[in-house]
Length: 153
Image 1 (cartoon, rainbow, N blue to C red):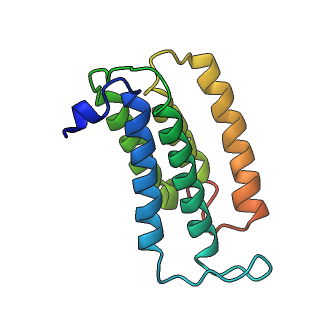
Image 2 (cartoon, rainbow, N blue to C red):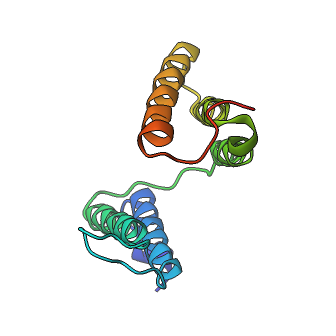
Protein backbone atom coordinates (compact mmCIF):
# COMPACT_ATOMS: atom_id res chain seq x y z
CA UNK A 1 0.00 0.00 0.00
CA UNK A 2 1.48 3.33 -1.01
CA UNK A 3 1.56 6.47 1.14
CA UNK A 4 -0.83 8.14 -1.26
CA UNK A 5 -3.48 5.46 -0.83
CA UNK A 6 -2.90 5.21 2.94
CA UNK A 7 -3.53 8.94 3.42
CA UNK A 8 -6.36 9.28 0.91
CA UNK A 9 -9.20 11.07 2.66
CA UNK A 10 -6.87 12.33 5.39
CA UNK A 11 -5.39 15.71 6.28
CA UNK A 12 -1.99 15.34 4.58
CA UNK A 13 -0.31 18.55 5.88
CA UNK A 14 -1.11 17.69 9.50
CA UNK A 15 -0.08 14.08 9.02
CA UNK A 16 3.26 15.28 7.68
CA UNK A 17 3.64 17.83 10.49
CA UNK A 18 2.84 15.24 13.16
CA UNK A 19 5.33 12.77 11.72
CA UNK A 20 8.05 15.43 11.48
CA UNK A 21 7.50 16.47 15.12
CA UNK A 22 7.59 12.86 16.32
CA UNK A 23 10.78 12.30 14.30
CA UNK A 24 12.44 15.45 15.70
CA UNK A 25 11.47 14.53 19.26
CA UNK A 26 12.86 11.01 18.80
CA UNK A 27 16.02 12.37 17.16
CA UNK A 28 16.57 14.73 20.10
CA UNK A 29 16.06 11.90 22.59
CA UNK A 30 18.55 9.79 20.70
CA UNK A 31 21.09 12.63 20.46
CA UNK A 32 20.89 13.31 24.20
CA UNK A 33 20.84 9.70 25.29
CA UNK A 34 24.20 9.98 27.08
CA UNK A 35 23.23 13.04 29.14
CA UNK A 36 22.21 12.33 32.72
CA UNK A 37 18.59 13.23 33.46
CA UNK A 38 18.74 13.92 37.19
CA UNK A 39 15.65 14.79 39.20
CA UNK A 40 13.41 17.86 39.28
CA UNK A 41 15.22 18.95 42.45
CA UNK A 42 18.70 18.29 41.04
CA UNK A 43 18.46 18.59 37.26
CA UNK A 44 21.14 17.02 35.15
CA UNK A 45 22.33 18.30 31.78
CA UNK A 46 19.80 16.09 29.98
CA UNK A 47 16.74 17.14 31.96
CA UNK A 48 15.59 20.08 29.83
CA UNK A 49 16.53 18.68 26.40
CA UNK A 50 14.91 15.32 27.13
CA UNK A 51 11.78 16.95 28.58
CA UNK A 52 11.41 19.23 25.55
CA UNK A 53 11.92 16.35 23.12
CA UNK A 54 9.23 14.30 24.86
CA UNK A 55 6.86 17.30 24.73
CA UNK A 56 7.59 17.83 21.01
CA UNK A 57 6.99 14.15 20.25
CA UNK A 58 3.74 14.15 22.28
CA UNK A 59 2.47 17.24 20.48
CA UNK A 60 3.37 15.55 17.19
CA UNK A 61 1.39 12.46 18.25
CA UNK A 62 -1.65 14.62 19.09
CA UNK A 63 -1.40 16.43 15.74
CA UNK A 64 -1.07 13.09 13.93
CA UNK A 65 -4.04 11.52 15.72
CA UNK A 66 -6.23 14.57 15.07
CA UNK A 67 -5.15 14.59 11.42
CA UNK A 68 -6.34 11.04 10.97
CA UNK A 69 -9.87 12.13 11.91
CA UNK A 70 -10.02 15.30 9.81
CA UNK A 71 -11.25 15.50 6.21
CA UNK A 72 -8.84 15.39 3.32
CA UNK A 73 -6.67 18.41 2.62
CA UNK A 74 -4.03 18.19 -0.08
CA UNK A 75 -0.46 19.36 0.34
CA UNK A 76 0.19 22.68 -1.34
CA UNK A 77 3.28 23.37 -3.39
CA UNK A 78 6.32 23.71 -1.16
CA UNK A 79 7.67 27.24 -0.91
CA UNK A 80 11.35 27.16 0.18
CA UNK A 81 11.62 30.94 0.63
CA UNK A 82 10.40 31.07 4.29
CA UNK A 83 12.67 28.17 5.25
CA UNK A 84 15.70 29.83 3.67
CA UNK A 85 14.89 33.13 5.39
CA UNK A 86 14.58 31.44 8.79
CA UNK A 87 17.85 29.52 8.33
CA UNK A 88 19.63 32.77 7.39
CA UNK A 89 18.15 34.50 10.45
CA UNK A 90 19.18 31.75 12.87
CA UNK A 91 22.64 31.35 11.31
CA UNK A 92 23.16 35.13 11.45
CA UNK A 93 22.23 35.13 15.13
CA UNK A 94 24.68 32.31 15.83
CA UNK A 95 27.54 34.10 14.06
CA UNK A 96 26.74 37.59 15.40
CA UNK A 97 26.03 36.76 19.04
CA UNK A 98 29.63 36.59 20.24
CA UNK A 99 31.10 39.45 18.24
CA UNK A 100 28.19 41.89 17.89
CA UNK A 101 26.40 41.19 21.16
CA UNK A 102 22.96 40.03 22.19
CA UNK A 103 21.04 43.13 21.15
CA UNK A 104 22.28 43.26 17.55
CA UNK A 105 22.14 39.47 17.08
CA UNK A 106 18.59 39.25 18.46
CA UNK A 107 17.46 42.21 16.38
CA UNK A 108 18.89 40.50 13.30
CA UNK A 109 17.12 37.23 14.15
CA UNK A 110 13.73 38.84 14.74
CA UNK A 111 13.77 41.22 11.78
CA UNK A 112 15.07 38.69 9.26
CA UNK A 113 12.84 35.94 10.68
CA UNK A 114 9.76 38.12 10.38
CA UNK A 115 10.44 38.55 6.66
CA UNK A 116 9.42 34.91 6.22
CA UNK A 117 5.81 36.01 6.75
CA UNK A 118 4.63 38.04 3.76
CA UNK A 119 1.85 39.59 5.87
CA UNK A 120 4.16 41.09 8.51
CA UNK A 121 4.16 44.87 8.89
CA UNK A 122 7.19 46.99 9.73
CA UNK A 123 5.48 48.66 12.67
CA UNK A 124 4.66 45.28 14.24
CA UNK A 125 8.17 44.02 13.51
CA UNK A 126 9.71 47.07 15.18
CA UNK A 127 7.53 46.85 18.30
CA UNK A 128 7.90 43.10 18.76
CA UNK A 129 11.66 43.29 18.15
CA UNK A 130 12.07 46.03 20.76
CA UNK A 131 9.97 44.19 23.35
CA UNK A 132 11.47 40.73 22.75
CA UNK A 133 15.05 42.00 22.65
CA UNK A 134 14.58 43.90 25.92
CA UNK A 135 12.87 40.99 27.67
CA UNK A 136 15.42 38.53 26.29
CA UNK A 137 18.34 40.63 27.53
CA UNK A 138 16.76 41.01 30.96
CA UNK A 139 16.00 37.30 31.23
CA UNK A 140 19.03 35.66 29.66
CA UNK A 141 21.88 38.12 30.19
CA UNK A 142 20.94 39.69 33.52
CA UNK A 143 18.55 37.13 35.05
CA UNK A 144 20.20 33.84 34.08
CA UNK A 145 23.72 35.20 33.65
CA UNK A 146 24.33 33.87 30.14
CA UNK A 147 27.91 34.71 29.22
CA UNK A 148 27.29 36.81 26.12
CA UNK A 149 28.10 40.45 25.56
CA UNK A 150 25.03 42.68 25.48
CA UNK A 151 26.63 45.14 23.03
CA UNK A 152 29.61 44.88 20.66
CA UNK A 153 32.91 45.57 22.37
